[in-house]
Amino acid sequence: MKKYLPLTFLFFIYITVCSCHKKSTIITLKNDSSISTILHQDNSNKPTLLLIKNDQCGACKIFYNYVHKNFDSVILPKLPDGTHVYQISINDFNNQNMWLFHISNSYAFPTVLYIDKNNNIKGIHKGADLYSFTDFLNTLKNPDKTSNSNDLKKQSTLLKGYVALIEDHAIPKPLFNEISKINHQKPEFMGALLEAYFYKYEKIHPERVTYIKELLQKSLKTSNQFYDIHQKLINDL
Image 1: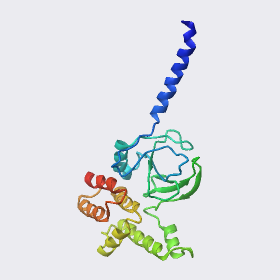
Image 2: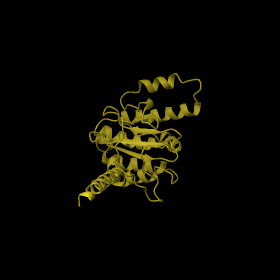
Image 3: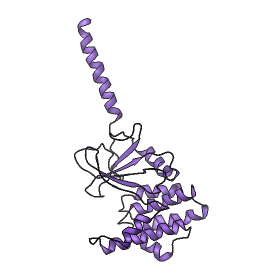
Image 4: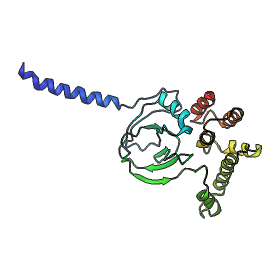
């Protein structure tokens, strides 16, 4: 019997390692899903959308609840202990690893980090603070010589939309139409817009619900890979 003890011990270690590995196994979603897979950062250099779960951010809860019900949570290195993240493979963002998350409660909009395959920060771009547009305005006033005039126009349109939120004014029809046109080029805007209402009001006023639904629905396209998520948000409203 004793001669089998080493084998038993090795088998126990094997089972333990396999069990631990299984807990971090990344699931593959159904083919009809708008988001193809959830995966660990690897050498494929696929664009990645990363959300850090922040229970203190009321603006995020409706979206996080949706993600939590549909996707596994993974832990990545070089992040604070106990930080839960959702790492979602996005097929049509860009050729860089885009990590999108809330850096603190003081920011109403996400912050984008560009990180290499070893999870080292390569660059950082702060999200738009709902109550401070100094840097953003300076960018508009002093654009780089290489800046495209169309990009500047889009930024200006988005800024007007944010200001309209702050001043508690409904977005005018012409501006609404312009936002709808550019949404497919900047798909995260509608999510940010909806989030801004949550952030500002903690909950959306009843009279705003119909307006926001209209804003979201008119700006969505079936080819937009965020369509399913936005549609779920609309239904939850």
